[in-house]
Amino acid sequence: MDLLYLSAPASVTMGFTFSMSVIPLAFIGNYLGVSQLNGASIGYFITCIIVLYPMMGMTFAMDTLCSHEYGRDRLSGEMGLILQRGVLINFLILTPLCIAIYYLTPFLTLLYGASVAEIAQDFLTYAPLYFAPFMLFIALTKFCNNQMQAHLPTIALTAGVILTPFLQLKFTPMGVRYTMIAMAISA
Image 1 (cartoon, helix red, strand yellow):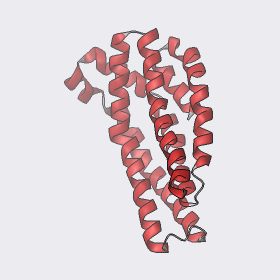
Image 2: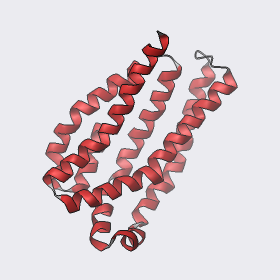
Image 3: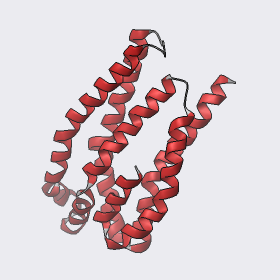
Image 4: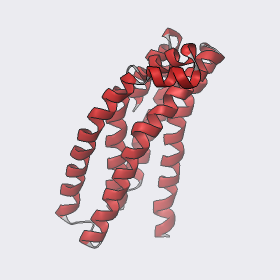
């Protein structure tokens, strides 16, 4: 029964996390067209490969190291301390990665052409505003799972999923750049 208690919210959280990226792209395709969707999809792919997935991997590794080191004592004060240090390290690593995404235009132009690269770079303009809350949410999720409180991130993410379509409805018609602002607000 404990497995169901922990796995159901964790599964919903993963599904909602995925929907937080799909909903904005659906709005871009619907309101701005296929070429804008193509550029924004490439921009989101770049954010995932360069920033989001490495940050998630580091957070998951940190969770594993904490569990191994402190014997899964979920009440250990060291767990919170290691989590805080891990978030700080992630922020330090996040800074050069955020700078790097602004210099991808020549690489993107070479791979996808000038028009798609321009749209992708436009999508990436405000991406650092999205990275910080996303990274903090992933760290919070791992911490809550360790504390056997898997439902807390699900509740927070439910609010984000409910808010996302309304924000995208307002921001997406202004362009792909503003879609990322809406993603940052909902994150």
